[in-house]
Image: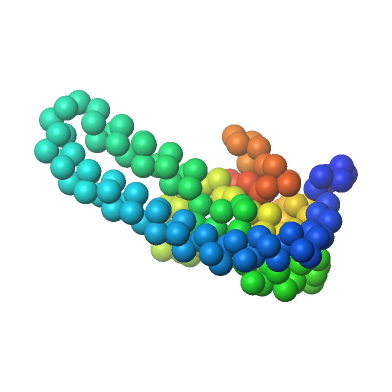
Length: 173
Protein backbone atom coordinates (compact mmCIF):
# COMPACT_ATOMS: atom_id res chain seq x y z
CA UNK A 1 0.00 0.00 0.00
CA UNK A 2 1.16 3.56 0.55
CA UNK A 3 3.86 3.74 3.17
CA UNK A 4 4.90 7.35 2.97
CA UNK A 5 3.44 9.73 5.56
CA UNK A 6 1.64 11.91 3.01
CA UNK A 7 -1.05 9.20 2.68
CA UNK A 8 -1.68 9.13 6.43
CA UNK A 9 -3.92 11.33 8.59
CA UNK A 10 -3.36 15.05 8.43
CA UNK A 11 -2.58 16.76 11.75
CA UNK A 12 -5.48 18.65 13.34
CA UNK A 13 -5.57 22.30 12.40
CA UNK A 14 -5.19 24.90 15.21
CA UNK A 15 -8.52 26.02 16.67
CA UNK A 16 -8.19 29.80 16.23
CA UNK A 17 -7.31 29.84 12.51
CA UNK A 18 -9.96 27.16 11.94
CA UNK A 19 -12.59 29.31 13.67
CA UNK A 20 -11.52 32.34 11.61
CA UNK A 21 -11.85 30.31 8.39
CA UNK A 22 -15.32 29.18 9.51
CA UNK A 23 -16.41 32.80 10.10
CA UNK A 24 -14.98 33.82 6.71
CA UNK A 25 -16.82 30.88 5.13
CA UNK A 26 -20.11 32.03 6.63
CA UNK A 27 -19.51 35.56 5.33
CA UNK A 28 -17.89 34.88 1.95
CA UNK A 29 -19.41 31.59 0.73
CA UNK A 30 -22.86 33.08 -0.08
CA UNK A 31 -21.13 35.76 -2.17
CA UNK A 32 -19.06 33.01 -3.85
CA UNK A 33 -22.19 31.03 -4.71
CA UNK A 34 -23.94 34.15 -6.01
CA UNK A 35 -20.94 34.92 -8.22
CA UNK A 36 -20.92 31.35 -9.62
CA UNK A 37 -24.67 31.52 -10.33
CA UNK A 38 -24.30 34.91 -12.06
CA UNK A 39 -21.47 33.58 -14.22
CA UNK A 40 -23.47 30.48 -15.13
CA UNK A 41 -26.55 32.56 -15.99
CA UNK A 42 -24.40 34.83 -18.14
CA UNK A 43 -23.00 31.75 -19.88
CA UNK A 44 -26.53 30.43 -20.49
CA UNK A 45 -27.58 33.81 -21.93
CA UNK A 46 -24.47 33.81 -24.10
CA UNK A 47 -25.21 30.27 -25.26
CA UNK A 48 -28.74 31.28 -26.29
CA UNK A 49 -27.26 34.06 -28.42
CA UNK A 50 -24.55 31.60 -29.47
CA UNK A 51 -27.16 29.28 -30.95
CA UNK A 52 -27.45 31.84 -33.73
CA UNK A 53 -23.71 31.60 -34.22
CA UNK A 54 -23.66 27.83 -34.61
CA UNK A 55 -23.14 28.38 -38.29
CA UNK A 56 -19.57 29.26 -37.33
CA UNK A 57 -17.63 25.97 -37.40
CA UNK A 58 -16.43 24.86 -33.98
CA UNK A 59 -18.25 27.55 -31.97
CA UNK A 60 -20.49 25.15 -30.04
CA UNK A 61 -17.68 22.66 -29.37
CA UNK A 62 -15.38 25.44 -28.13
CA UNK A 63 -18.10 26.92 -25.94
CA UNK A 64 -18.86 23.54 -24.34
CA UNK A 65 -15.15 22.90 -23.76
CA UNK A 66 -14.84 26.31 -22.07
CA UNK A 67 -17.84 25.59 -19.82
CA UNK A 68 -16.38 22.20 -18.87
CA UNK A 69 -13.07 23.82 -17.92
CA UNK A 70 -14.91 26.45 -15.86
CA UNK A 71 -16.91 23.82 -13.96
CA UNK A 72 -13.75 21.75 -13.35
CA UNK A 73 -11.95 24.72 -11.80
CA UNK A 74 -14.80 26.20 -9.77
CA UNK A 75 -15.96 24.30 -6.74
CA UNK A 76 -19.19 24.86 -4.86
CA UNK A 77 -17.23 24.08 -1.67
CA UNK A 78 -13.83 25.71 -2.22
CA UNK A 79 -10.82 24.29 -0.40
CA UNK A 80 -10.53 27.41 1.79
CA UNK A 81 -13.93 27.04 3.42
CA UNK A 82 -14.60 25.29 6.73
CA UNK A 83 -18.09 23.94 7.39
CA UNK A 84 -19.76 23.59 10.78
CA UNK A 85 -19.27 19.77 10.89
CA UNK A 86 -15.60 20.21 10.01
CA UNK A 87 -15.20 22.77 12.79
CA UNK A 88 -16.92 20.52 15.33
CA UNK A 89 -15.16 17.28 14.32
CA UNK A 90 -11.62 18.49 13.59
CA UNK A 91 -9.27 15.60 14.41
CA UNK A 92 -12.12 13.11 15.05
CA UNK A 93 -10.97 9.97 13.20
CA UNK A 94 -14.27 8.11 13.67
CA UNK A 95 -16.25 10.94 12.09
CA UNK A 96 -13.91 11.19 9.11
CA UNK A 97 -13.74 7.42 8.71
CA UNK A 98 -17.54 7.29 8.43
CA UNK A 99 -17.51 10.27 6.05
CA UNK A 100 -14.87 8.74 3.77
CA UNK A 101 -16.56 5.32 3.83
CA UNK A 102 -19.90 6.88 2.87
CA UNK A 103 -18.34 8.89 0.04
CA UNK A 104 -16.80 5.75 -1.51
CA UNK A 105 -20.01 3.76 -0.93
CA UNK A 106 -21.99 6.54 -2.66
CA UNK A 107 -19.72 6.38 -5.72
CA UNK A 108 -20.08 2.60 -5.77
CA UNK A 109 -23.89 2.89 -5.54
CA UNK A 110 -23.95 5.28 -8.50
CA UNK A 111 -21.87 2.88 -10.56
CA UNK A 112 -24.01 -0.14 -9.66
CA UNK A 113 -27.26 1.75 -10.27
CA UNK A 114 -26.05 2.77 -13.74
CA UNK A 115 -25.00 -0.81 -14.50
CA UNK A 116 -28.37 -2.22 -13.35
CA UNK A 117 -30.20 0.35 -15.49
CA UNK A 118 -27.91 -0.64 -18.40
CA UNK A 119 -26.73 2.95 -18.70
CA UNK A 120 -23.23 4.32 -18.91
CA UNK A 121 -21.96 5.40 -15.49
CA UNK A 122 -21.10 9.05 -14.97
CA UNK A 123 -17.70 9.77 -16.51
CA UNK A 124 -14.75 9.54 -14.14
CA UNK A 125 -12.29 9.90 -12.58
CA UNK A 126 -13.97 10.71 -9.28
CA UNK A 127 -12.37 13.04 -6.77
CA UNK A 128 -12.76 12.64 -3.02
CA UNK A 129 -11.64 15.91 -1.40
CA UNK A 130 -9.52 16.10 1.73
CA UNK A 131 -12.52 17.46 3.66
CA UNK A 132 -13.94 13.90 3.53
CA UNK A 133 -10.88 12.06 4.89
CA UNK A 134 -8.69 14.58 6.76
CA UNK A 135 -8.33 12.72 10.10
CA UNK A 136 -7.96 9.21 8.62
CA UNK A 137 -5.78 9.98 5.63
CA UNK A 138 -5.86 9.29 1.92
CA UNK A 139 -4.52 5.78 2.51
CA UNK A 140 -7.77 4.85 4.26
CA UNK A 141 -9.79 6.04 1.25
CA UNK A 142 -7.63 3.93 -1.07
CA UNK A 143 -8.08 0.82 1.10
CA UNK A 144 -11.86 1.24 1.28
CA UNK A 145 -12.07 2.01 -2.44
CA UNK A 146 -10.00 -1.04 -3.43
CA UNK A 147 -12.30 -3.28 -1.39
CA UNK A 148 -15.22 -1.91 -3.46
CA UNK A 149 -13.61 -2.29 -6.88
CA UNK A 150 -11.82 1.04 -7.33
CA UNK A 151 -8.23 2.02 -7.99
CA UNK A 152 -6.22 5.22 -8.10
CA UNK A 153 -6.61 7.06 -11.38
CA UNK A 154 -3.50 6.90 -13.53
CA UNK A 155 -4.55 9.63 -15.98
CA UNK A 156 -4.56 12.41 -13.42
CA UNK A 157 -2.69 11.46 -10.22
CA UNK A 158 -4.02 11.98 -6.71
CA UNK A 159 -2.61 14.55 -4.32
CA UNK A 160 -3.12 13.04 -0.83
CA UNK A 161 -3.00 16.50 0.78
CA UNK A 162 -5.88 17.74 -1.44
CA UNK A 163 -7.83 14.84 -2.93
CA UNK A 164 -7.87 11.19 -3.88
CA UNK A 165 -8.75 10.56 -7.52
CA UNK A 166 -10.38 7.17 -8.18
CA UNK A 167 -11.47 5.23 -11.20
CA UNK A 168 -13.54 2.08 -11.36
CA UNK A 169 -11.73 -1.16 -12.14
CA UNK A 170 -12.84 -2.65 -15.48
CA UNK A 171 -15.60 -5.26 -15.28
CA UNK A 172 -14.34 -8.83 -15.58
CA UNK A 173 -15.40 -10.36 -18.88
